[in-house]
Length: 243
Ligand SMILES: Nc1nc2c(c(=O)[nH]1)N[C@H]1C(S)=C(S)[C@@H](COP(=O)(O)O)O[C@H]1N2
Ligand SMILES: [Mo]
Image (cartoon, rainbow, N blue to C red):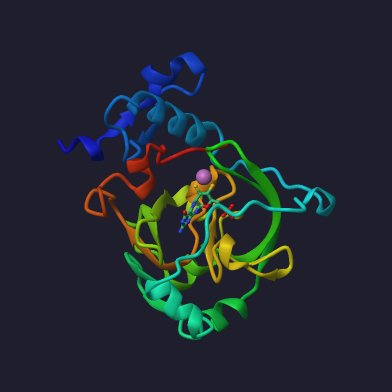
């Protein structure tokens, strides 16, 4: 049997944490190498006890005065070309295991009903900030394009080619997982990922990919990119990192 598709029987491995015996979850895509036990346990624990948990939300007064932007938007290539055209032709293409694939324009996305959340973005490097994010819940988009019955993961790509990531359907359909186009009441600043970024507030900052333009629904991450679910796995980040 293909080991990356094998269900992980949690009963033995997680018994010490008191989690229900006999539950089954899938292995995370980075369940290989020396970090595998930690990656598997963290993912299993969150999926079995915290599946529907909400990320903490804050008050307006708690919004950071100077949010830290981790890097600048690309100065050349396709991103810079879109920037020079005011992002008029930017689209978010949604395809893969969906019944109605579609490319959404920015105008279309901005016209959709929004949710707003004041949440914490924490970088694995130690710094963090609180901001108000407004955008379209990813679940709304996925409902519109209609997931196929074998859909399991949602992969999302940045216009910055070296950055992409993926989440399971629990995370993708979670009410706080958002395609953000607005931050603190203004169009999402470019250094924070404008015109569009993924916001995954239940996980560390690196899952909140900036400059997103492509979403692909799949049943397996094995043949996507490096086969480990995220560019970040190459930089040493766990595929799943719930907080
Ligand atoms: N395209 C892209 N997305 C990205 C990154 C990046 O370098 N490029 N950095 C990630 C990391 S490590 C963090 S902590 C957050 C930082 O978000 P911020 O720039 O709004 O602070 O974005 C994430 N998304
Ligand atoms: Mo980060």
